[in-house]
Image: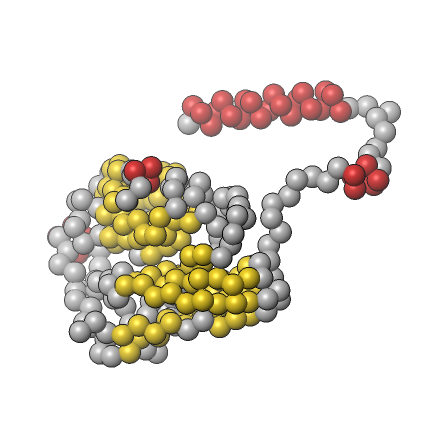
Length: 259
Ligand SMILES: [Cu+2]
């Protein structure tokens, strides 16, 4: 809060200074020629290629056991809460697969987007179960429950380590990941069944398969990419995909029931 106040003061002061320097009708307007000679620095232009596909599943869908909730958490649900570790959709596809460009972007760099990722603790479950985020992007962590959860990351990279409690309903905390890592597990030590995974990348080319098993990665530069699909219990698969400007490539993955 104090930092935000200071920033606000700094911003206001800066605005005043700028207004003080730039004021006056006599100031000549910049000509279009001037603008063309000194273009403002821009981020790498987004590409026009895309890769979309489906995470297929074959074999017998594993049971999704009901989670044994404690009394406090069970009171928040009408019926059973099922595990999310392996979710086979009605159409025979997999939910919660993290698909991302693993290789092929070269030395391009991508600034962290201003949009936040929201990560909620609700009904003694993390939501979403799997998500992607860029290094330096803000994750807004919420506690929608009326009691304590903690958010304890389990990274390989030390700089992605955090662990804090959120005891009150409506609490929010901003958190960032510092280093690329696929995946970082997050757990709650109060409720042992609570688990989620974050895929941390230095670019925006990732997606999580949904309730129809589909994913879509857009805005890619033309190129040849190694695409990886990660699944919590079924491992990873990679595929090489070449896509040109304005083209839409298809990349379907096929996971099988583990024996
Ligand atoms: Cu918890």
